[in-house]
Length: 334
Ligand SMILES: *[C@@H]1O[C@H](CO)[C@@H](O)[C@H](O)[C@H]1NC(C)=O
Image (cartoon, rainbow, N blue to C red; front, side, top):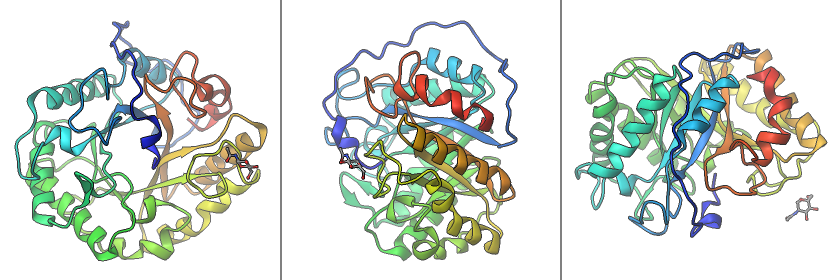
């Protein structure tokens, strides 16, 4: 999601409430997607205010939310955070003990529910606002970050959120460095989600990111993570969807690219407004993905998180706009 600056400075209460354990999802899932999830926003908030203060600039996902969404059938949670808070000052530095422990705690909680936890450095290919060009440093960053999770095969590593306005060969080299760094940490069994330039958009993927087909992984567990919003400029900032069919239309090129290159993808972010046109566009898109489940492994909604208030796409129970008005229509695709 690109316009996180919009919510900088929000102050809220992110207390993790104790909730009854839900170790096994009780809802029978309707789809065969491998990953069906909800992004969990909060620890990346206040991204212009580093390091920021817990409870003021940023917060962590709420455990009772994970429980509720697991009971709806979701099995993947993409946990956004800032690279600079996890490893301050320099790419080859050490983990910040407190922030790192909080990340490990929520990851442990999610995976103890049998769900996937996706580690999402929500940095747009930048560190302290500068495009990352030090691929060795990025590799080291990833080795440092992956180590605590090396034994947990329900963890998924997402190389970076939405590279954009970067040299295309650099995007390839950064993704490869991340893959190599993660595997060097001994994390050899986990999936790695790689992202592309141009905000990892599915609709521009084949024209922009075709070189990423050359990524190599000794464990052969790369999944291409694409994002797609359904408003006019594809930015996810307008609750109006272009048409009832825009979802499937915007995935068509990428689907052909995946098939011709023998790759698999996940739709790591999508959303649309709580209105009839968007519901048709969203369900049409998810149905199209099911028809092409040889290449589409699943999807994640943008977004849950405790500080969204009345945000048009909020999937936060119990009263988020999407949670109350969109989720019921998505249930057949979970
Ligand atoms: C959202 O998009 C619609 C249709 O394109 C447009 O009429 C409306 O002004 C947009 N709203 C905002 C807040 O930009």
